[in-house]
Length: 169
Image 1 (tube, rainbow, N blue to C red):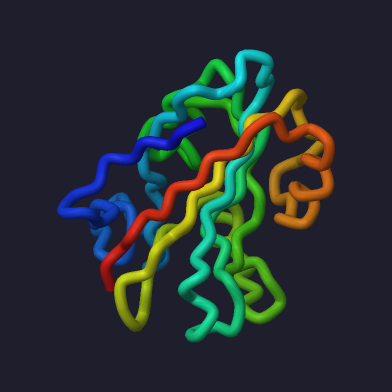
Image 2 (tube, rainbow, N blue to C red):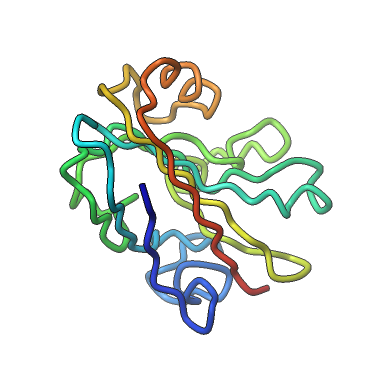
């Protein structure tokens, strides 16, 4: 399985991260998710789940920063359009990101659930997108936590694809 993302000069386009403007921002957070495609998924896959995580955040925050979790994306949906996290254009269930955690505890659902884009504070960070091809839909509801996704996926992962996405500070 393979993930394809259009980069600009080797980086995530600005509108999906720290340098977003206008409608791509909400409460100073980038909220428009980037488009990507999935290739060569197993023929028997029923759904996809995804995780967007910043492992380069560890020296800054003390832990990897979760930017997006989503599940129950139909396996027929191999192209995720721009703003798939919020537009309603495709069916998916958004989980919580790190803004929902105890250390940040942002009360705004638009900030703590769904995609919140990269905002590296110190240097270019590599954001890791992991897509899981699954043999079933998962029993999750909006606002699930990453650990709930991990447990629900156990025994159902057919394939995974990983792609690092650099984003400028």
